[in-house]
Amino acid sequence: MKIKIHGGTAREGEPSLCLTCRHASVVRGQKSADQIVRCGRLEERIPFRVSSCTDYVSHDHPSLWHMEDIAWVLRTDPKRKQIGFVRGKDLPFKDRLLLDDE
Image (tube, rainbow, N blue to C red; front, side, top):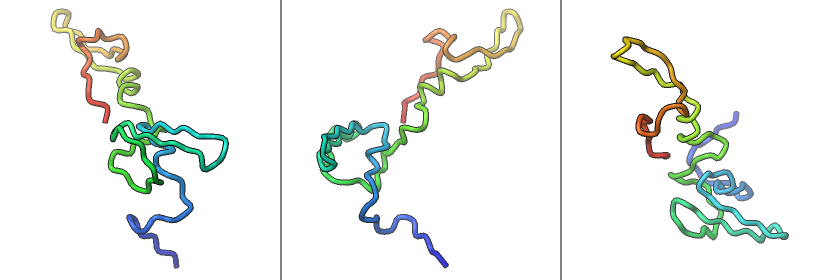
């Protein structure tokens, strides 16, 4: 029987979370040991492998801005008494509901 414990001790050989984080800037050299990782949230260089981070955002998932851009927004026109959908990117900037990208 295998038991998985979440939040336990990190394994030695696992890659850093920063390698797949949207906020990270990773610069690699020719050698595998040549690597500089800078965190955009902390605005600092990270000198070690990260196994857990509260600000981690996977770069595989679309950002909030991209989701708002492709969204369909339900709009009402009280003058014409019409209800309909409008693409988010077709809305004037002042009519968009902009949220913080977190």
